[in-house]
Length: 275
Image (cartoon, rainbow, N blue to C red; front, side, top):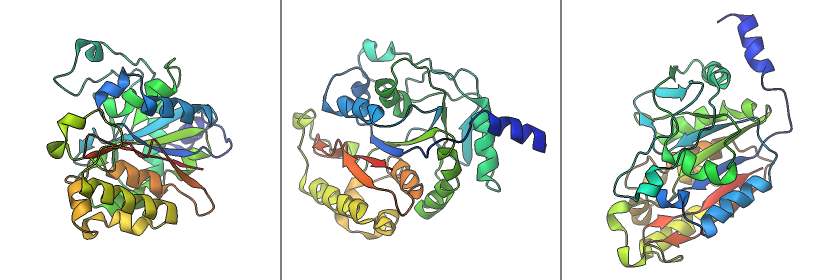
């Protein structure tokens, strides 16, 4: 790729006011088709920020060896789940992709090797929340995968390189859940907002305090933070999208929480807006 090619890519995304960053607790795939306070929170978040030129999403559900970015013109809607009603499998979110943004992302993250991917698409961590924010599917969406071979600090540092995309009208969304332990779900209270095991309540309180105090190192070092965090984050896939979002925060930017509830005993819907 020569300098003229890079200039052409950059010209597609002109400088804008710095876009906010979001972390969205996406919860059950059923949130894609249900009406509840959480999807209302996603919609409200979209009304409070400028309409983006494009979206880059880091989803818990694209967990890879190495780092990839979707680079197709029209990403498919991936139904990466099982045991749900047909109505959920019928959902399509036909947002365009952006090969141009994918190429720019590859260049920004160098010398880290990021490979362009033409097979993945949009998984439910991406489309189940973005469809509520932008139901017309008229904003290009790309996904950046999470390299499961790397520690949290690596992901925090990598995210910082993406900051310049915010100056070009790109909305960066991390999509996962801070508390996410599917093995310990309280099925009697799967739809009860506020239902949380004692360890989940403690983990939510700890992480919320760290978020609001700007103590991101404790969040990065979650494995050292006691039993409640070990239960809350049995695997890092749903947690690392939060780390990406926090890596994009500048010191002067405000951070606030929304959709801040536990549900089903062992899931938190807590979401974050930065900027």
